[in-house]
Length: 133
Image (cartoon, rainbow, N blue to C red; front, side):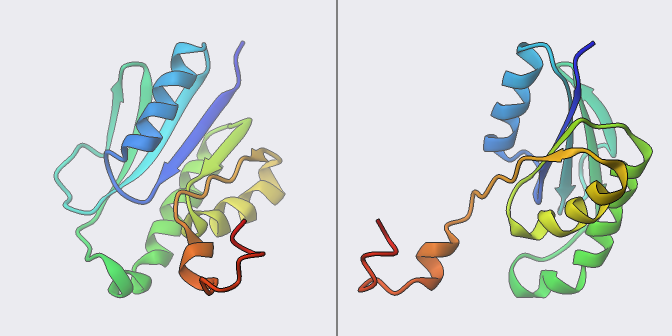
């Protein structure tokens, strides 16, 4: 019996996340994916190539205005994590890590944090070469 793995992406059809999900499924893992459908056009749940896809279908803006909607998104993540049994959860980017970390303290699953954003490039001055190595 292979472990269940959950991948989380803050937007729908993220190529990076889908590639990982397909590779894990091909390797024999039972793979789940959570996506935020910001256009609210896709099904809330479907199975695509043996990948269980759970979608938070809620129209939303991009950028700073999104911050007010994050608690709803986090609640959706927490709900999926509590109602399923996962061995490993991989939140993509910092905005998905907080709710996953919280639930992992109770449900006892492992977290593999995936940072697709280049935070260091955003906050470290170019002249600080010892930090950019």
